[in-house]
Image (cartoon, rainbow, N blue to C red; front, side, top):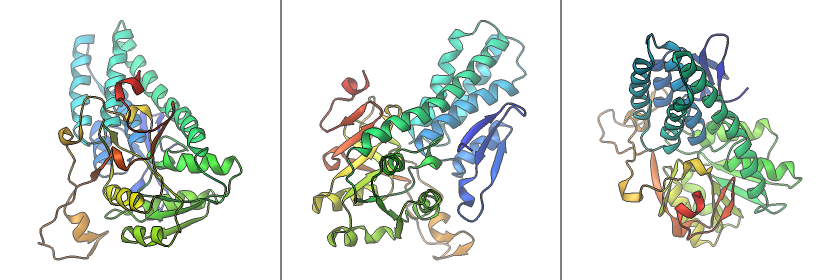
Length: 339
């Protein structure tokens, strides 16, 4: 199934619970806004494009559940829902993008039922477009990979981070689909191990050769000539930086030092022309994500913790950005790219 989808029979959001992978594959159902927001905060659903769909479906869910008797009251309910959803993950720009795009579709409705129909249709369109976008992005990116390449990636930018196919892993999947022999090195991506738990699981499902390493080994494998390219996803791209899972910046510095191409794969919806690195709020995660691994304590319970979810990779460390519109090489003007 898709990572996240809408169930027409129950008027609810269904998704794969990513916190349980790879030990358990479980589909969960969000029947109210509180359960959706919990799923977003706890990373049951995660990844920029998947969050875009989650935000859109969240507005559709809020519309379905609203008891408003007129259009004005329903719009007020949806505005409250929009603010609530967007507050769950402030750094990931796609979440707000999906919410705002769905809210904007209301202008096409003329009555109460029309609003509910329009926002659901728009949410489904966003989900469908994500799959098409990733396929286009993947084909552009696949041309950058040579037969026999070993590609290093960080976190998870595969189908679990999207509605389907993936961004960084979508590029790899497209290259393999084109007949190229591609091997992957996946960084574990502490503290929640999305690379170890999810990326390796995805690639093994597709019979793509993958080797797991600890995050601190990336410089070692680069120095040994074991990495030909690095491809990562993104949660937000400003004019001067790429925001991705914490640790991405370190890999970019090492790739630059070893003269290894460093690619970012992301849809146009991830670009943010209105902000710069120093104006973006980077969310901090729960301190216990570092004090515990699952339910096992691995650090003193009262140790001070700094646990940002993302870091910023300066654009000068990025070889190219792969999008559904093609491959773009810095420096570029976001306004021109988004036109």
